[in-house]
Length: 99
Image 1 (tube, rainbow, N blue to C red):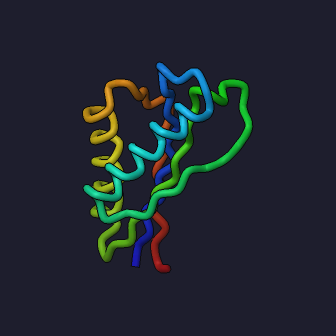
Image 2 (image 1 turned 135 degrees about the horizontal axis):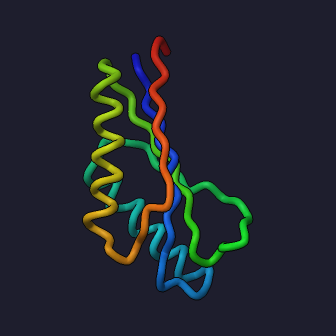
């Protein structure tokens, strides 16, 4: 088994409150879950850009490490194309094999 892990940081451009940020992050998570076979969670943390910054963690289990990595990269592309109000600031993927 191979577990692919994605950590992605997003900027919600038009967010002016934590409530607005939460609405956008929930929408993004719901769209991801509906389209991809992944687990998604929002990482909580305090930073200087709290109203506009969202960090999501996603994981995908596969029998093929290349497939796990491809699914997570497709997920990043999906967010960029489907949500023009959200900017991908940074992301990183890792595949853990032999689990």
